[in-house]
Length: 338
Ligand code: SF4
Image (cartoon, rainbow, N blue to C red; front, side):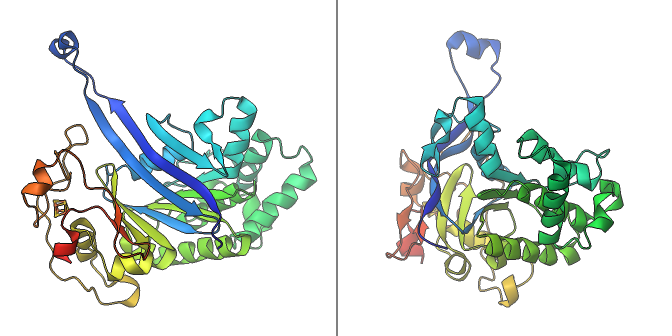
């Protein structure tokens, strides 16, 4: 990994309008679901960067915004120096979607059940007009299957998705991204629908491929235990904001934000062979609705350390660096707590 920034996300927002009652329409009131509410981060070339948080924290929406599957409300997404919201020609957008690929949570749903593995792998080559030569397509498909360790490839090319195990399907899904030689892969919960026994194998394969091809991953997950093993850096999201960001080791061994501490405490088994360092950091209540975000620090309704500054402030605490170590936290009281 070098220091070249491949993706830069700046103050990104995605707000969805809520349906309004007639009375609200007449009063001119608008309500929003603030799925992503002003997040910034950089990903270096060759890095595995994780976005972690509970359902509804905005991590998947962030991935979809980067993939251009959603239009952003505000902010910038800069990929290899180009602001992707400025891409307007179909040709530029197509090229971008070739360079940035996505592995989805459910490999079965993301594949046409009537396609054989061969067709699944040919499809992106045809869409992106990489080649019309059948022999070349076959060669690229075989190479991609070899990369993901589905060997011998001939045994798999003619199978339908239902003839594969969950792990094999996820390998094919990964191979499908590789045929286009992307620079960035967004992996959205890639192992959450796979048997526990196969998860480590799939992540190991993905990491091996990443190292061999010097790929960059944005790994989206709710699972801190896999992120520790798999990622270089972790950003923890809560209700549309990043509350903590740092190297995987720092986040797991020295969490600074009360929410991160609660997430680590909730991991049932020790993380990557380490004993769980935090035994009993409870968290109050449920995650609030993204259409009704609490004033001040949005975590205050669940935080055991909350003081008046946390709920009387007009704004969320900003991410600030803890001690020049690349470890950032957004908490008014982090020095007091830690
Ligand atoms: Fe808790 Fe206050 Fe820190 Fe928010 S700012 S995490 S409420 S202590």
